[in-house]
Length: 75
Image (cartoon, rainbow, N blue to C red; front, side, top):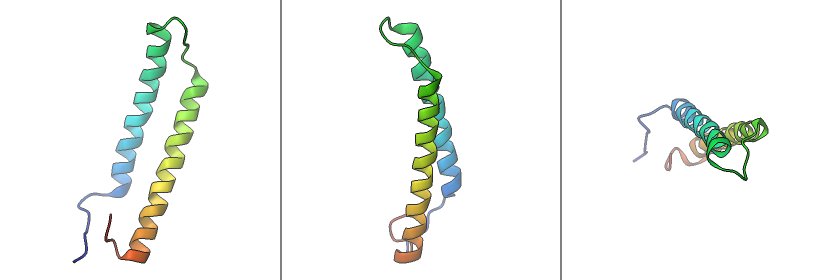
């Protein structure tokens, strides 16, 4: 029996990416406001976005491999 997900992978990735983006911005803002020795920087936000994009691409690639080679047994 094959496992067929009841959700769209693109939709889930978009929701997770949006959550991670907002989380990263909140962390940078809190670093600036709540600590004395740390400073929030926009370069960190850019690095977070790059990580989100690369991670999403990796998940999509693995998902496509899984569908092509294992007939969707794990995703």
